[in-house]
Length: 111
Image (cartoon, rainbow, N blue to C red; front, side, top):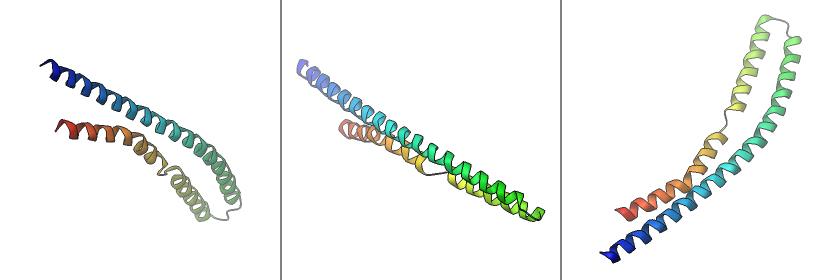
């Protein structure tokens, strides 16, 4: 019985270390993701300002209501497409990988 308890304690300690390492890697990925997100937000802000300025120029030179609606619709589509990028999904996916891997390894050992 004491040997079984010792083995259980060692296994628990090893799994705890693996879990901590996975969490550390996960936080590292999140940190990288947030840095990437900050750079992307800066670029997005610059592009948005340029796009808004260009749209206003077009609106001021529009000759009909149809042109105004078309210009506004094109601007709205560009703004939506620019904002909705896969980057947000990739950040979450990369941050979760180490934890998923550690969980899968632990589940295999428990089976």
